[in-house]
Length: 255
Ligand code: FPP
Image (cartoon, rainbow, N blue to C red; front, side):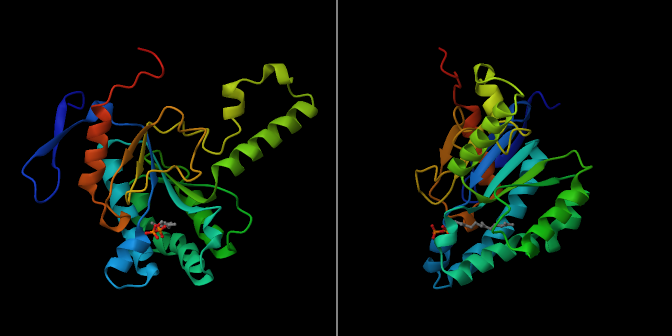
């Protein structure tokens, strides 16, 4: 009975309190800014890349949990257009993660009916990274379970600029007039248009920013921030975020 409060999960292992998720009101699309990998590593005297490696394992856990509870799409901010400013070895390490992630987990993702997608500027991404992701996209495109959308070399202002350029070019070619441009039309040029806007955004590590992530799509999204560093993020934290989301009143500007 999915339309009842059926799912009881513990808030965290030290807590006896339980969260009741209403599985009939799980957000369709959850976007995640996975932050705090570097600080997680520093706290343990480890190199920053150790945090990214651990963060990759958390992606797997969160995908599994999201799929179990009926989330339809997860967009994970894996690399921003600004992240190129990081030291080269760190950038190279992060760019190897998608390949490593898919080498390790693709068979399981296929089994769980997950569809892998990518959103971002392809130019600049190493060919081995693109190859791994494109292969995963190809091999999972017939699946109809959770969409795992990696935002890779993604920046929202870049996305909006590209959308406006393509829209203007279509106007110049006479496909439609500027009078016909409305929010829906412009939105259709955004990279995640097929998935729909996220209902919930999670950002870890205590930072209270959007960092150029899905600025168009987040217009009415519920924002959920936690101090937990991404490598420490657990399935129960996802439950907690969704529980809090379910207990907020969304009015979309109405009353
Ligand atoms: C932000 O933490 C994290 C990143 C820029 C990289 C995110 C990548 C992962 C979590 C792994 C992704 C996995 C796959 C499969 C692509 P930070 O380094 O900015 O942390 P800090 O703010 O503490 O320095």
